[in-house]
Image (tube, rainbow, N blue to C red; front, side, top):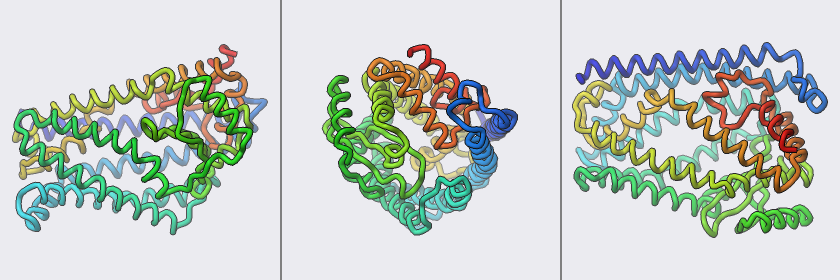
Length: 415
């Protein structure tokens, strides 16, 4: 392949993926609007027309904004690649430090800073525009900027040494460097899973033991029945940023803990909270988390092998607007353009995720009452303004959870 051919292929793939994303988004918005005037029959007794219309308007607003972001990100990607942005950053870093690992780390850091600055107005509008307009935002500008500063500091402290290590392995480990990099990345992933609950998450939120003693005892009973050992059951002050509710497992090994947003505890009663937790335990008992990790590790291994083949091809760099062929530009270009060429594989991951959600629901229906999980989900759909009428094709591409109507119907069959 020549550089010109690869440039043409990249432009075609970029335009095709953007147009497909815009078409799917417009389909989704139109579908939601068409069903705005009536609550689906299966939800008519539990969700009001006003709540349904609020969810439709919230979805349409996010979709419209997302289309703008999609176009902007495509322009930025073209600018960094064919427009010479990465080449300019690489030469700037070389001028500061001279060719080598340090200049590669500097170039990647500069790219990260540039991306953060360019995306900042969009993050700001999403938080203080859309989320605020629909009553979800609780974040103050001061907290928003503090979160941004903490995230940047963590990226520097944790990410830059990782990048330096990866570039060193790529330059020193010969043709098998990709195996070494993969092993280092896997180790880093496990370390992050281990330290996140106790060292990183508390930098952003306050965690305290679940204050409701009766609820804690019934949750411990559920954990005992399911054979799940947790380091603690905590409530997180999610309400200081958003009124959306959630619950999650975090950690690895002895650091595993269960976290409930304080907003979720206000939204649901004890039976419903237990059913939601049983669903999350279903992912653990059905080994979904382990399956996803194995799949992710295997995929990364294949991608690093592919990068090892491409990084020796001049057309790979030149076709993407870069003349400085080195490990830093190879790594950066590969992972920047990868989503363009893999977008069509998105439905596969979404399908697997939805399959796991159905299986976790079935587990929850066996350990608690399906009716309680249904009641919890309906409240969460309502309070989080989740649309009940997504476009089916858009859902195939993007939705990690089954559409509301299908999920509730499956639970009713189990009940």
